[in-house]
Length: 229
Image 1 (cartoon, rainbow, N blue to C red):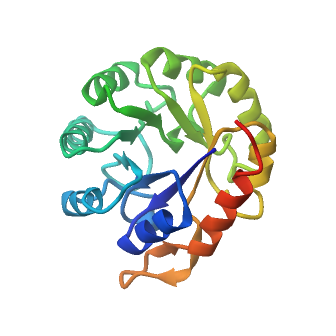
Image 2: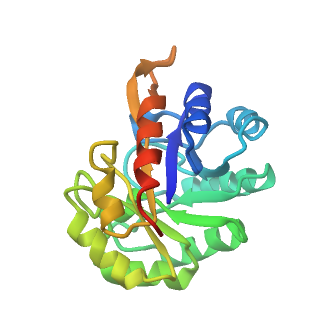
């Protein structure tokens, strides 16, 4: 099983590593649902972490309908993360009608390859999710991070299972959104090979960012060991 921890601080990074997590999704400003991490933070984490590192590329908070300037910024940030040694890129965008901007995404995929590519939770707002998933598969994405178009992945489990059947072995559906140590086994039992969580605890950084909880990460990792891929 792959346990991905959303990491926005060095404290969360160390807890993810010490807790046995498989991979990091690096971002900043989790209270804004995550934004592209600063270059300094990215370089610092790359110098410390022994875990696979996927970098969230999201130029601003709010919706995923971007201006041409924001699209250019995203492309630059993808190239930046790639050049500094990230193993994966987490990205996504939508048109105004909530369809996929295929030309934009094709360009981003070309920039990011051969890195591992995740389409992020913009998918939870996309129209025609099953058809859109097939388009992402054709574009070359390796993974979709989604809550099944519901407020939490637990509530979206039915759609997640349907998407997983469509994706088969060509693409990984990774449940995320409200995943924790109390419900993670729902996803393991349903056959998902990867889950995404922030494992937020009561501790916070000096700037108010929630810190991933070591005990929670250890519990999720331990529970995942009971299930075979």
